[in-house]
Length: 581
Image (cartoon, rainbow, N blue to C red; front, side):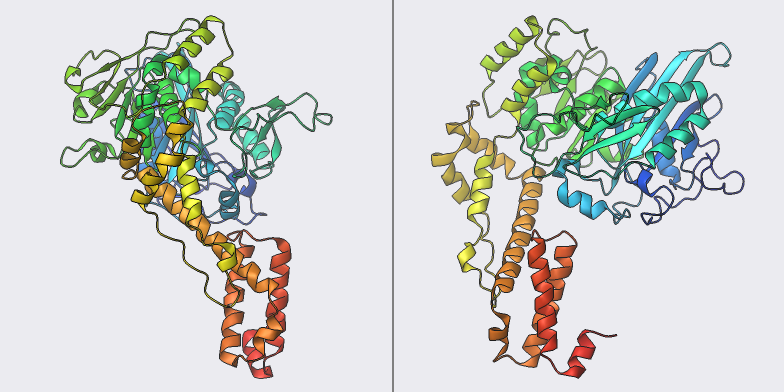
């Protein structure tokens, strides 16, 4: 599969070459190490070509010290090329997501924890999967035996920045296909000079004579905030290429052929149902899957998803087995063979060829699974599922009117997003009510526990403050919530919120300690109790300094002062134990 794998001696760092060793990943890099800044954005860059004898072959991996397992190499090779049913001529961009071999590994990059603590949940670095962003070119070439030039440039990253990396590929790939290796090496060196992605900051990223300006979203951003405006342009010549988002797709364009069923698709995704998306090409497949999974924001998509998947994938048997229920995954494919293999799946979306912009394309129809044919299946949503919420006909009319008036696509997407983003503030309000009152948190006692989430209490609260009172979508909200409680997304949301609340409770307790008079507390305490306090304060301080506790800098300084004060009150022998030289 890999034409260069395991051949010849290891190459010097900085040279282009295929990955050799079998262990996957990269050793931890200090900020000053080679490729440390590059690694904050990308894992590696791969080039996949078509070899008459080998088929898809991994031509090179850069930096060459990045290690891919044989299974990962094989997956990248197959996922970087459209299958034979797609017939993609010219240039095609798409993306895939693949499992890292060996499962989840501890974050090796120094800034992983810091970045993830401030980034929106949906934009955190993937701990156990790689994203592949592909620029594929297939053009006639009489100098090649097969008659076609076929090559893919692939950016491999753990960041879900699809808009940024697609824009980057549109700059790099055409130049690379003309000039090959020297161009790629120069680009990677430029990326190695970029600042690390910092949530809440606007960054200028120079590459190939262009400055790409992006804002990295932060967890504290408001969902209704406007796209970032250009800034610091007086020092940038020529003017930067400003990306409105690093990750958001044009939802309206993605959903154009399925607008009449967006409500049903949204519910299926919300409930974590297995969903097969069969599209005519990898770009349509990957965009539809990414659009579906992004519809839950700000909820994190907690199921598996594969924007593009092939029969050669190492997980093919796992996803197609009939010995157990279909997995909770949104699977994007282009090979019609999957209709036969996965006809036992409860929900299949067949998308037709994309139409040129203009009139709204013919909408897919809702069909019973029994209408699914092994061959020549027509576009449609094949499911027996009945949506809990009613279709918003007024919205469809507004969107259709927008098409007729040539309303900008971003405005159409905002209309669509405003209606079908998760209208679940009620569960947030209820969750907040489980938090102990701040006045009940005292410095010298263990803080009270967060009360457990009661589904019955929550459902009763919907009668007076449910989404049916404020949301334009009407229907059986109670029934939808009951099913949502059983989904991986509720479990993921609840675990994350409970973790955040527990950290907040711990931070409030630390603040209460720092506001108390510690010398008064120490008067009647034994040495054992005082030493115990020192150890607990140190533990909290370490967690807070690691950005795990939401506390102010002044609180950290006061906690450190308290530790020094307490240790100073102890006998010299204990001081030596607690503060060894």
